[in-house]
Image 1 (cartoon, rainbow, N blue to C red):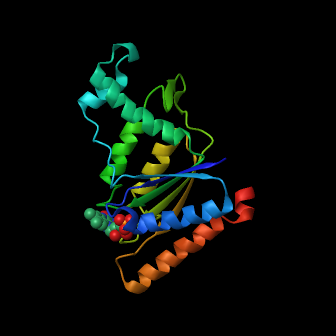
Image 2: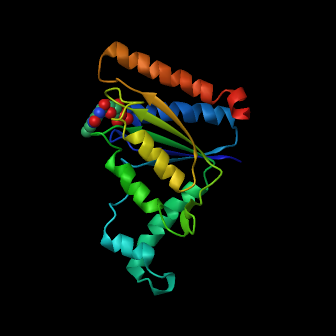
Length: 206
Ligand SMILES: Cc1cc2nc3c(=O)[nH]c(=O)nc-3n(C[C@H](O)[C@H](O)[C@H](O)COP(=O)(O)O)c2cc1C
């Protein structure tokens, strides 16, 4: 049984354009994978705390020396990591906010990047431990930035996901959503047809 984890990061929760596109992908994925399991992690309704010195201290403390508070803090991170590890497919709904990813998603990433847990250091550099997964990113933007130096999200997300071992990453863009009604409709229609392509039997078999 395959598991899909959908991570929403729009402040509008399920109403965000990125979440709606991700939901459309998930609905079609469900139809193609009867019996598949879907987990939705909504960072607007259930935000992860920002990383601070205490939280990071808990992560790096030796397991047998952790205080009760540190055990609880690490438990929150461990649960997020276990959820991510359980997923075969990770769907990320990512709006562009002020030239970056939503801070809620950054806080989530800060909880799942754990040395010895999701990556490890070796003589040849860091090695990601979350291998064998596919990721699809639904990137929604008011303007148009894909393929330009102003698109900070694509290289960052590729680098971060690759760092933890997720190297099979597809981006589906819906850009120019604030330009005009026509531009928005065209962008969303383009993203929807990309969903159909990604879930076509030929591509899935490849
Ligand atoms: C706080 C905020 C900041 C934004 N910053 C940008 C930006 O830097 N560049 C851009 O093209 N669009 C920007 N937008 C527009 C969003 O990227 C666009 O509305 C997108 O559809 C939001 O996705 P969502 O509906 O899933 O939340 C911003 C929107 C908000 C609310």
